[in-house]
Amino acid sequence: MKPIAIFYEHPDWFKPLFAELDRRQLPYVKIPADQHGFALASSEAPYSLVFNRASPSAYLRGRGNITFYTQDWLGQLESQGIPVVNGTKVYGYEISKIRQLQLLEQLKIRYPKSWAINHPSAALEAAKDLRFPIVVKANIGGSGAGIVRYDSFADLESAVNEGTVPMGIDGAALVQEYAKPEGGHIVRIEVLNGEYLYAIRVYPPQGTFDLCPADACQTSDGRELVRAACAIDAPKRGLRVERADPPREMIDAAVKIARTIDLDVGGIEYLVDERDGQAYIYDINALSNFVADAVNVIGFDPFAKLVDYLEFRARRSES
Image (cartoon, rainbow, N blue to C red):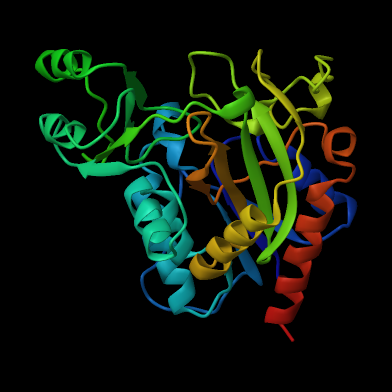
């Protein structure tokens, strides 16, 4: 079998994936996404499968050259008939929160009331239609980056005048009603191959928007997990996680999203607004590192199921 290519950015996030591939002795190659080039002329496919692990937040780690380049390379692969896990279609949603909400509108799935803008001054007009508090979200963010809360119109107006309103690296942002999570947590539903995989409740520290559950290093009873169990080597403090069992309607919504946009593996996040008791989906993630200490938190190793899927796709491509 030709090797499976892992196109990745963060040096530590995918150690559990590499370890599972090694354990099974499957042929694979690591392709650093920030030091890459490709020939535009068509050639024989060197890989059985390419797994896209490029992160929209790469710019926060000095690797902003990845974000838009990835779309071009994935398109080249697909034009050559090379299968891609999380390909161009879903990656287009990964790097645009605006497109994500357009999708939810199309699918008639509830999301926080929002406006899209391409200049900070436009936030003032947008805010007139929204209930405070609001948040402004950079269109390309990642792990809560580029999100600022404003409790009043005056606060937002001051930020506009001071030039501190966050805009994405593409010059766009969302202006959105802030929904306070009921119970102090959000829910992340993970999907794989168009099916429900598992769900977790994540309790972010108060006053932050850092909701990356892969970095969670405490169980629901507050026990700190061992460093080796974490998805990255530098665990963040104060993020608690536990297994969740979402209602059927939320699982169905997540699966519908995944199948519509060809999300092979990823997470859909929602919260229940304590003001009205309604569930709102607010983020779609094509990059999923899975929860830390998965066996203890959710009862199984999701990386084993992920590699099952990768191997199946790779072998099917060569049959």
